[in-house]
Length: 203
Length: 173
Ligand code: SF4
Image (cartoon, rainbow over all chains, first blue to last red; front, side, top):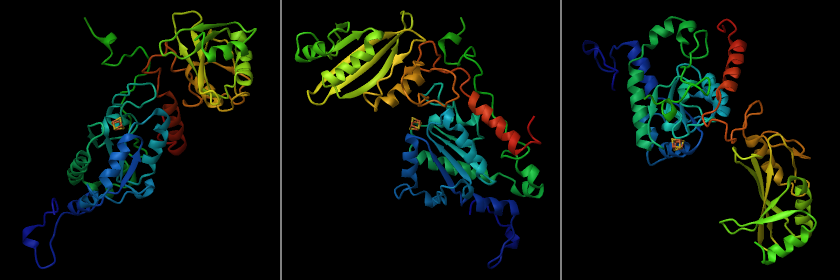
């Protein structure tokens, strides 16, 4: 049962006491519903992961839905272009809280080999990301590992405090008043050179 | 490629239009034409030399050279199983003749060419960008365009600002 630790003295036939945070987290982490945002080649690997061979159902996350309103795990699988960025952000906004994001593959983590005007250099410039998965494409095992890591991350959350504090606070990184501020990793002009650019090298 | 059957048919069709044969490493018969004669040459090649399909229309930016662009048409004749390639020098700001009247399928290729190089095609109905968003300001395949782009996130940020102002007017600063 993982983090759902019963208080030993209260354990009887069919009953035990535990923390409500642990109970909520236990439910959330074992029934992640992924929203597959398959943008290019990584999307194919994502399908393999959902299929019978790697069988994501073992971890409770096989119920992929194609409506963001039914999902709580956004898997950005592939190369996100700036033209697609608005659509990806809309998908994220439409997912109800609580929600998590996995950046699958180097493309969605950092832009990958596409150091280009058309590609978002890491989806974390437009969305908050929980787990990054390296690889081009990552093997399905790596993404399953990411889901397990995300589960341990969910275990550490304090959902009750957020629920009791009301909607203004529980909506910390969603679309509410406290909007997530994207990082400033995006270059604003051509003169702001990329760290890998030889012209930026000193000496 | 002078001396072959293709070159005779092409030379015959292009009688009266100035053209030079080029020798290219890939061995494809290639011609160089002046911009003024291009429209006539394309029509003549289709109607008199039997090139009934345009495989591609594209351009090359050879920046330090003047004029900087080279427009490339590659034509294919199904009847003769032959290809020919046309090269035309073009300066920035000069308009090229559209060949969509002859080969409607060239419309997308001309749109892509306009999108990537900023070459306008006269006589093309609906010359819009093909790949980049319509509000995009630059022509990315030009050699003086940095490959990392100039403010690549501009359109997204504009959209994001509008969205925040619409959905959460109290949070927009
Ligand atoms: S990381 Fe590799 S496999 Fe995944 S979308 Fe990018 S290029 Fe394709």
